[in-house]
Length: 84
Image: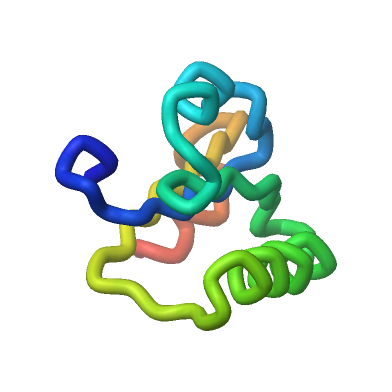
């Protein structure tokens, strides 16, 4: 998206992971915001930062990738029990 000239807002728990890209693009093109979606206070802060930086919140494309790790025997996990 950045190579196509689009504006990108990237939210992630570890913003330093995108330091290489941040150094190649201006904040007007790439805004990196710390966000852990399990923390409601960080969600509010992230929305405020995006709105402050761009004056509005809108999108043509949204990509969402949230990982989840479940440790235990599959039969005993809540995910397995909900599909029975």
